[in-house]
Structure formats: structure tokens, C-alpha cells
Amino acid sequence: DVADTLKVNQSYQTSNEYVLIGKNTANDGGIVMSSKSGSNSATNDWQIVNSGGARDLHFYAYGLGDNALILDRETGNATFAGSIGIGAAPSEDLHITGDTPVIRLTDSDTSRDAQIVGIDGNLRFDADNNNAQSGTNISFRTDGATALTIDSSQQVGIGITSPQTNLHVIN
Image (tube, rainbow, N blue to C red; front, top):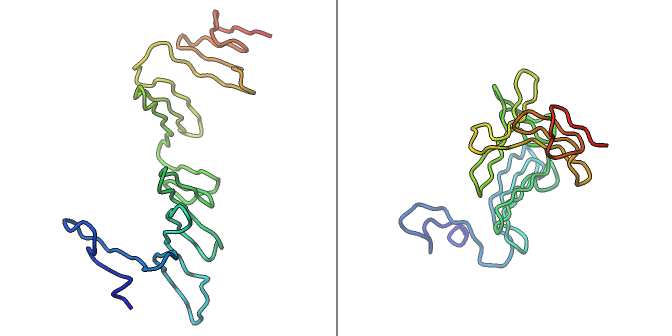
């Protein structure tokens, strides 16, 4: 009965247009997109389902045999089953393609940025690229300890976090 499953503005905000899909039972509800070619097999189906005890949003791909994407309704976290491609189909776990692809990291407490840039096959690390804070550095850590530091004076420290010369090495 369509009247029990597909509703427009039924008990929801009337100032906006919404399509509300629901069920009167405790089972999962959602949308199925099917592309069956001559059989009743679900192998080409996609489902968008409000599912599980937490009622997270699941994008299920029958060809994959699992969820392609889960959106957590409490945290907003997204869990992907496969690789992610931004700007192109992925060939690695995370694949970003662009004229000059950038991964920008912004500290929400200070609104200061650091970034990783790929250009012409070269890799660039930027600490405080807009010079909003003095004394920034780039550090490489292993096993919880700083292994290498490049400070804002371009001094390099190996085994030390505050190099005192152009190349400062501590054994």
C-alpha cells in the first residue's frame, strides 16, 4: 500500500518539500534502485537504508556484497568499503587528482593551516603557509619521538626538536 510507505510532507516541516519514506514496523526502511536484466536477481541493486540499531544510513551494493558507505548519524563519520577517488577514479586507497592537488589541515582552535601539495611529481609540505604564526616547524616522528625537525629558520635537527645550527645531529 503506497499510502503507508511514501508520503510528502507527512508529519514533517510543511515549509519545505520533503519525500518521507517510512514503515509502520520496526524493520529497516529505505530506497532500492534496481537494474534487473531478465531475472529477479538482486545483483545489480543498490539500497539506501536507514539500518541497524543506531539507525545509521547504509549505502549497500549487492555486487559488492556489503555496504559501500555507512554514514553514522551520531558522529557524522563516513566509513567507505573501498578506495576513494577525488577528481578521478581511484587507483589507491585515497587518490586525489587535480592541477595541483592539496591536502589542507586546519586547526579548528586557531584557524591556522598546514598542507601537503603535489606538483609536477614533487611533494611539498607547508607549515603555516600564510605566515599567520611565527616559529612553526615540520617534524617527522617515529615510535612517539621526534626523529627530524625543520624549523622556521630552515635549521634541521636530527634527534633534536630545537636545532641550534643549520644541521644539528644528536645520537
